[in-house]
Image 1 (spheres, rainbow, N blue to C red):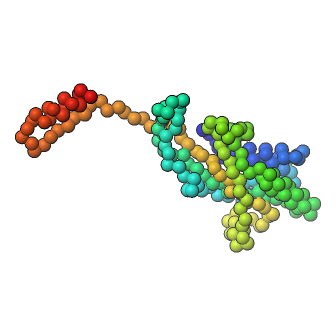
Image 2 (cartoon, rainbow, N blue to C red; image 1 turned 90 degrees about the horizontal axis):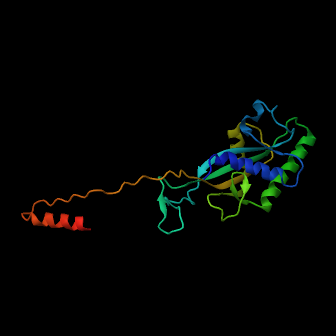
Length: 216
């Protein structure tokens, strides 16, 4: 499993939207909560800001399996130290209006609709790094984007938490990013077995058991 999954997944989504039938980059990855502290670094006057607003464990898809196949034979199995960690990443695509102009606001709405159309057409991706691969490819990352509908009360809580005024936006739940430490658990072979029988007058029983173990 590759490292930097969060970074590479966001970069993949950014490139996916930017390459979806447009001639310019419309997505910029930054923290929407701090955008008003300084936005001179933005390339566009009305970009779509992609931010992570929550990271949680996907308990439904939690897999306690700690064994992986490492060969062609059924017996070629390795044991991992811990099971895979599946995450749900809540993403926010916000239409940002840098200069507070009407034309920028309208342009932002068009770009936001572009994002929705992109993930409505395809919302499941199998990737390695930033490249789409087939579902049969070993050790790939599967991304599933589900549109999340927020109520007015939830929107109010969200933008209050972000410390910003409401912007036209769309929220997605992204799953599943599997973060797995493939460090194998060291298993030591049993080199010696000692069996002692207590409270018995017959010492031959102990000798008999030791002889059976040694013969096996």
